[in-house]
Length: 489
Image 1: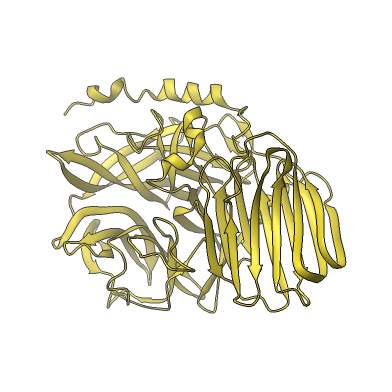
Image 2: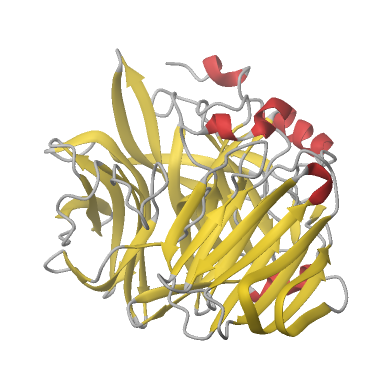
């Protein structure tokens, strides 16, 4: 199949020009410090890397519409996570191998080259065919030049749901981990090892999760000093009262990987994020930090996002730093996020109070600490009074459960999410509120939640803290936040 077929569909110059014309954003729902595009559908973060003095962020993108079709890779770069290059089209379907989509993958640096590895998707007579391919980033052209196919098809015993390669090095040996599905429709991770310049199937990663969903997407293996962590997104987990409440989940297991035995000794599976809108995260290591981005969205729930009517869908999360402690990952916004603060914080609080309120800037960061005292229930509301809407976080001390409740919002996804959260005396929340994207870190990053709200009116909002009995102490700080600064690459 000739490349001419794709010339009119994916014109890099034309698409890049349209992106430049769409930035800065003007619509009231466009976020300021969460990465998104002026048009099209954004999903998985891809190819996260540090290369030539900059962070490189690639991402899945359909520049032709707001459907899960025509999957390309977009690209931005930054030195500080505040100043970003204007996004550009970096990789797109161009031949028989990836004619039905350039699916997710990762990046890694060797010498003076940033390599990318991704899944080529094509369909023939309704049959999916997946292959894994290398590409090389060419910064002077702003494109990923396609190299050879390194894995032509899935290993025997697995279906063509075989994708999302990610590279790691363990004990001096180089591996790829891929998400896969057995012929019995069980989710798995498989490993390939590079030997004598070629990638060879090493085998299935042995875990304690023998029956854990029908597909594992977007695996990343992080060899940390404190232990090894496998991030992945299992599909098909049954929802429970306090876990697995999204259509698809994202989480991790932590322990020790034996690459000789291909065996991962690990603890329980933990979700990375308890919000409504988080999936397919990817993380990478740089100068001692494990940095993660997630996709703020949920596949097969596009009807819950009213921005589709305006021509764009979804965001990426803020970058987070992961820290492994006693087998659990804690997450926190990168230190660089403090650069978005505009001036000194507005401090607020009270002693022995049942309710207080604090006006918020349109884009805000809030640090909140509640010494519960005799209170058994505490509520933190973000209230859009003129619109008659609010978002609520409720903590029930008696059963140690946090509830996220957006049923009082009128547009977009609604519903509730509940999860266990152990709080002894003091409840802590660290909230980032963008135009529509909200990220919350609970108890110093023990849990996190990412989700969207779409207020019906462009109106001021207020933070309201209340409880069933007087709270012993309320301490808060609120900053007004700025947004990304864009520049030509």
